[in-house]
Picture 1 (cartoon, rainbow, N blue to C red):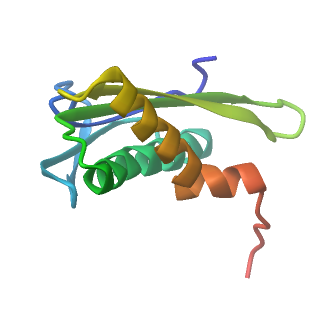
Picture 2: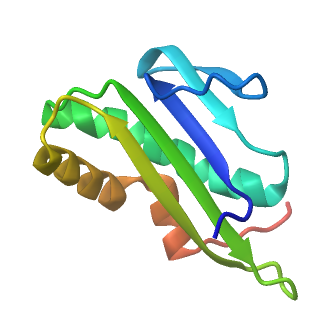
Length: 129
């Protein structure tokens, strides 16, 4: 399920690819990298991945977990007849001296609180003004 895949990275897991776009980031002095095509499908997945990356840093600070690098990959598919999303899958890679148990707790917490994935899961009305 690597359709419309996007990758965001920060810290020691920032992308070194020439095509990666770099943005400033409030949680990391070096900023973040984004690898994504500019289509609506990619942007939807990028919103989810970017939110997860941000929340890893925010929640890690709250839990006292040091994070040296984060990479989030998100992808998914769409029904070709309706263009309704068939779901988004994301994967998080972390570099940290924390234990596997601490990192598991961190990722569980992020999955619970990440705002954009929560909004997508709940559904939303979108209308033109």
